[in-house]
Image 1: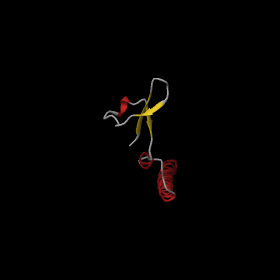
Image 2: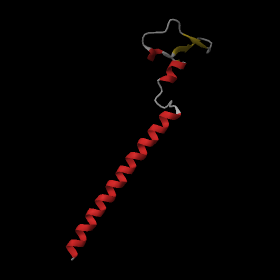
Image 3: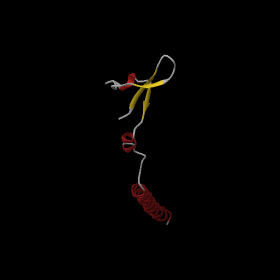
Length: 82
């Protein structure tokens, strides 16, 4: 949960206590450590490795499928010319 802050009359930043129910009324939202845990781009090395492996596997399957389709199409063209 973020901390709600606004500007006072002198232009200084002040924290709103208690925080409002509607956070869209805040002039500034200061992130806390809880917000960092909800960030989808905050990955551990293990999480990054598993995503990289999944991407490589998908590309490999696509490459193999394309190679199989190309072989099948090449075989049909040779039969037509004969």
